[in-house]
Image 1: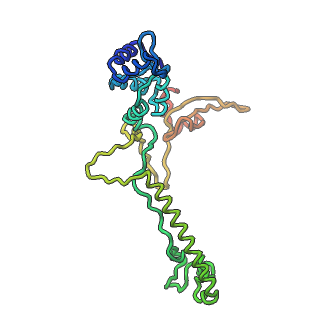
Image 2: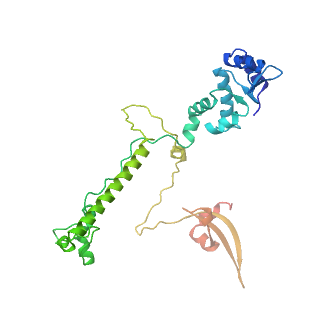
Image 3: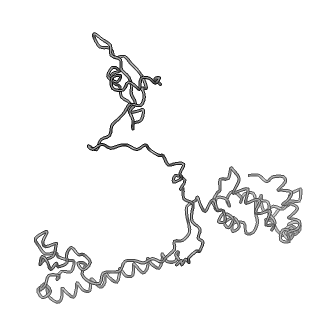
Amino acid sequence: MQVKHSSKIKIKDAQEKDPYLLKMNTKVQEGKNNQFIIQDDGMLLNGKRVCVPNVEELRMEIMHEAHYAPYAMHPGSTKMYRDLRPYYWWPTMKKDVGEFVARCLTCQQVKAEHQARTGKLHPLSILEWKWKDHDGFCCWVTTIGIAPYEALYGRKCRSPICWSIEGLRQLEGPELVQQTMDKIQTVKKYLKAAQDRQKRYVNKHRREMEYEVREKVFLRFHHGGNLEIRHILHEPEIEILEGLTYSEEPIEILDRSIKELRNKEISMVKVRWSHHSPREATWEVEENMREKYPYIFSEPVR
């Protein structure tokens, strides 16, 4: 990318009217600023970059060329800023480039979304009691008198809680029961802390969105052109017979050949059948085809 002569003249003329650049120009002449330099033609530079004055039309023209030009191909904000940075400079350049790219409808419709998802995170609730309360396969069924698991495998289902079988609590002893209960509470506490931490982290980048009837929202462009009427092909109807079969008729003769045997020659024709593509054409004996379908021989061979 190079600064065009016409743009260079516009920038130079606008520099003479910009208060900030005039102030920098004075400091350079007084030797108080080494960052800016003045060319022989009077153009103020920041290093090797042209200082663009605070003129919105001029800055928009530069960004428009860097974004919409055929060789640019709609770069993102970071790529576009890096392309402009070696040649131009103004105080809010990076911010202006980001806002310019964000307003490009083509980029919003085509490129991947980077906006925060709407809606808060709602994690699954932690189980309050035995896991079998959430599994109907292990629940007691009145009609059969046992649980489906026991009916299928011939034994009772043991849950992670070791005293799920009635009467086992007394057999195991109160100490083991209390130890297991303490472990369960510790696991639930860790699960709750992990869910709260994940929910708090995710919700930083999300927000609740409420929409009203007839409110306009921006939707990304979806390729729906294949649903247009001009893309719909109308296939001919196929008459199905009683035996779930359909009759095939020869459409045309694609080619001819002679099959040479030891004592005679047989004329063969390549026939294209209805409801089939030319690739599925078959070779048939010409004599048999003339007897069954004489009408196809009135047309010239392709």
